[in-house]
Image 1 (cartoon, rainbow, N blue to C red):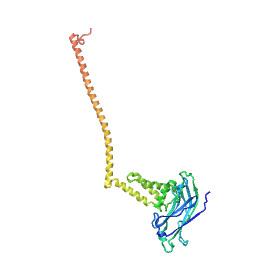
Image 2 (spheres, rainbow, N blue to C red; image 1 turned 90 degrees about the vertical axis):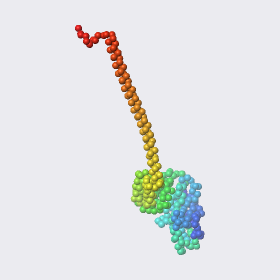
Image 3 (spheres, rainbow, N blue to C red; image 1 turned 180 degrees about the vertical axis):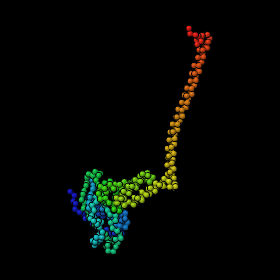
Image 4 (tube, helix red, strand yellow; image 1 turned 180 degrees about the horizontal axis):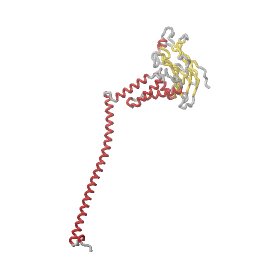
Length: 333
C-alpha cells in the first residue's frame, strides 16, 4: 500500500525580480513517483500574475494508464517566513494527474503588483512551499476508457481532459454561474458545449441553414444552464455573417462563390438536357418508323385492292369470251 502521508517540499528562488524565464524546482518524491514545480515569474497566459504548476516528473517512465489523485497546496513565503499567498481558500483541492494531464497549476497564483509592495518580498528572495498528499495510485492498465476525471467540478473522460482544460484556461469564468448541481447533468452539458465548439470550428461556407439554426438553439440552452458563452455567441454571429456574405454581399469573393454555384447548376442542367435529347431522339426515331410502316401498310392495302379488282375483271372477260348464259336472266322452270 502506498504511503498516503503528506509530503512537504520547499525551495528558494534568489534574485526573483531578475528572473524572466521559467524556473523549475528540483525533483521530489511522493506517492510512488517524482514531482517538480514550475514557476513563471512573469506569468504564463496571464502576464501580470505569478504562475505556478505542480508536475509529474518523467511521466513516460510510469506504467501505461497511470494515475495519481492528490490533495495539493502551494504557499509563497518571504525570507522571514511570512505567508505572502496561498493557492486555495476553501481547503486544498484534490486533483487527478494522468498521462493525458500530468500537471495542475494556477496561472493567476499571485498578482505581481502585490509582490512588489513594500515589505512583502525581502532580499529579493521568494520561498515556494508545496504540500502533496497522494490519496490514490493506479499503476496498471486498468482504465477502461470510461473513467472520468474532475476538471473544475465537471466529470469528464480521460480523452476529454485536454479539451475541457483548454476551455477553462481560455475562459476561466465560463461555468462560474452554472446552475445544475447533479454531476450527471453537468457532464451532459459539458459534452454539449464541447460538441458545439467543435461544430463551430468548421469553415463558415460548410454550414447549411438548419445547422446554424440548431447551433443557435444549443447555445441558448447552454446559456440558460448558466454557462457564460459571450465568446461563443460572437463566433456564431461571425459564421452567420460570413455565410450571408458568401451567399451574395456584392464582394468579389461572394460573386466568385455564386458564379461557382451557378456553373455547377448549369453543368447539371446540361447533363439532364443531354439525357432528354437522347430520349427525344429515340421518340422521333420511333415516330418515323411508325410513319414509314403506316405508309407501307397503305401502299399494301392499295396494291391488294387493285390486284383483286384486276382479277375480277379478268374473270368477267373470260366468261364473256366463252359466251356463258346470263344466269340471272333465265327463268326457273
